[in-house]
Length: 261
Image (cartoon, rainbow, N blue to C red):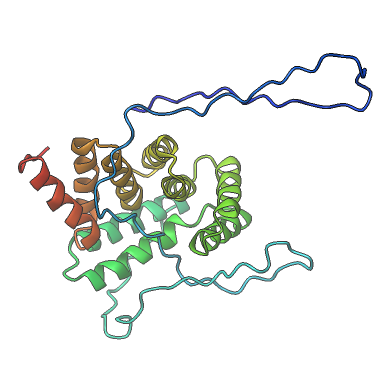
């Protein structure tokens, strides 16, 4: 689906102190930047999906001299209805392995998400799902991901990119790392990378509605409206109360003449 664009690196002149004074100097100009033709089409008034929320974390104990200690780890959560929402009795997972338990919990949460009647109820269930997705199995990777998300929310894009790249190198089978990196690539305007990493996340977690949302958004910005609609529709099927996605489904269906893929 995705064709990688390879760009030759630019060459820069290197000066040395021992270069003979009578040697002819040759200027080497950098290669011109790659220009995509045609330019990606950006639909009007199309908002980026917001950074996915992080469940509230326990306070971290940092070592002295940590260069990232100034990053705020707290992230907003949706908990206004927590007291008024009846909590169903938890299923018994005691006889399952850790992987089987994870899969069973996700199946149960997605079943409840598909039946949520309000956006608020859907948001609460989505946060439960993210709590599972955010666990890579490595405490250090989890911390790096959380710091990357905090940096992204704080518009510290370069730091967020460094941290997300570190996550995907350490845990290449961690879907959430690719999903977060894809969303950041969309912010950076790197559409090719955003598509590729969203697909990578979905290959590891096909129900990742946030990766589907990002994929639909970048495809729509590239003018690939049929594919964007398909991604949005799948995200909306998984998370029906996610208004921002359902609005894009409606808009694209109208644009494409009401066609249903």
